[in-house]
Image 1 (spheres, rainbow, N blue to C red):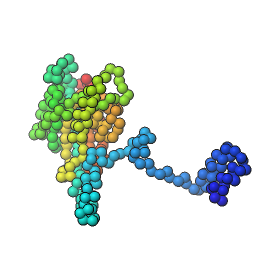
Image 2: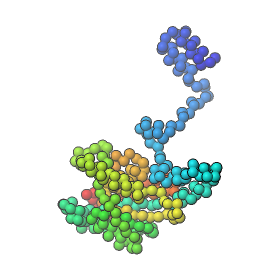
Image 3: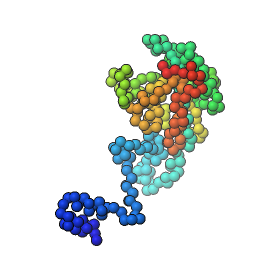
Image 4: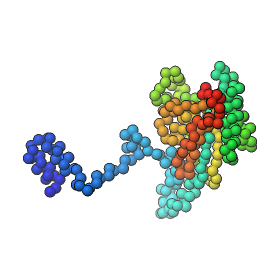
Length: 286
């Protein structure tokens, strides 16, 4: 008996909406030994609209297929050999990113130049430098915020990483990346600060956090010395977590956060805010 005929018969015998619901439930129930049909796979957009999440493979705009102009090449030759073209733009190595928060500094300073490292802060930087050196890695570069506390932290750490090129940038300066969710009462920057700082910190993320260039043959190990807000925002963006959650994390002074960006664009957080190499009495979060 067909579904429609069974449904009409059930409704006719019972004569009510309750019977209709019962009939639908009975007819939809699978037979003994039958499995429920699998629901159709949701698209990334549908998943996000329901409050879920889906990984964007082209988050850094370096997904190989997105870098090939198939329409142009097909117009020239009538066909395209995809594999050789993909190999030209495909990443072959991983980038190891070490995000270091600056050490403790003088909170009483009015100007940035007055916010120098404290004696304890200098000790913290020494320990962070020793920790990085103990990993036995060949570091490719150090990029640091141009703010005084980050520059001084870099100078101390660099003693333990001799010969590694250092570059200063304003992009990594501290700021207010995006209004946090949930909000907090004791820290409320003006809307214009979020507007200006947020654009700059997002630019830092796009400039420095991405998969390796196709020409890169070996893994690289790069150190970024900057600030807690910048690091927390970068971690959220790199893992494709809601960036508004950046303030839910806490980072100690001189801490090490370690990200790996694999050739296929996947990102792994190996360490978040490590300070286990410091004695407990030397750990601060100011």
